[in-house]
Length: 351
Image (cartoon, rainbow, N blue to C red):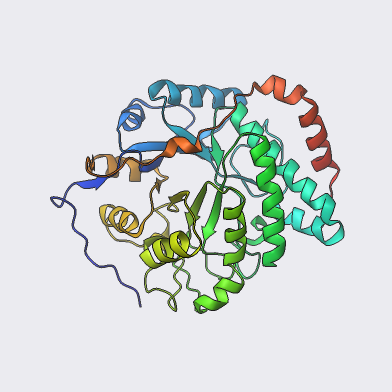
């Protein structure tokens, strides 16, 4: 069974990280004074928003504006997948889960591809109009054995996931937004929920190459800018969970699959990330090759900020490549012909 190995920080109290390597969560719908201090720290490169940070569209605009006024180089992100994982709800378009696009594929592949483009464009355009840069999407896992993924996945067949993801990425590109696929190398074939445990997938690498990896490889070839690692252990490949594994990140993701984008950890507060001290989880993630580390809860952020120090010898993380490429006014967006066309398509679809 996998166990943590001790990885001491510089003096036992300090965690050294590259500049802009932390993506942090906030407590509520308004920016607090102590959070402003966190955002000014050079170790922070991104802010992730949740339902707790959202009340209504105008409040969200005020919050994202306050974040940018505090430090303009920060990027702002969210999990806005659609279905049950949609952090902004009231006043936002209600997006169907990705599995609905897979159901459409079974009946009409051409329509499913167009629906995927519509889904991505509506999601991306709406979050950009309210001050965000990108969403952690699409889910590239297979819709197989796990409830935590379930209808968050396009389909259970790798080739269908790949084709729908390609169309979805085209819609995102049309909106001027970058994509982060998740959860590499695949969370959809294990029953356990990494929020509450460390799942294990016993299959050999060759089996993963034939099933879970192809949708990621296809997305890499179509411009995926980032990938989020899975808190899942694949003992036939490496004793360490994927997010702490140099074999998965350096040898397979980077060298074998040729991925050149940003590598994000999943939230380091999840049970699947282990129960070692936070400084050790951070050090293990960075040593494996993760570039942006998610600290989603304010208590975790406060602990990190009390210990963190920027490593001046390390290259700063280029989080700016995830910045939105367009600026959209919400009113103009909802009056546009594209909004009318794509939302009508989504509203008319009934899986």
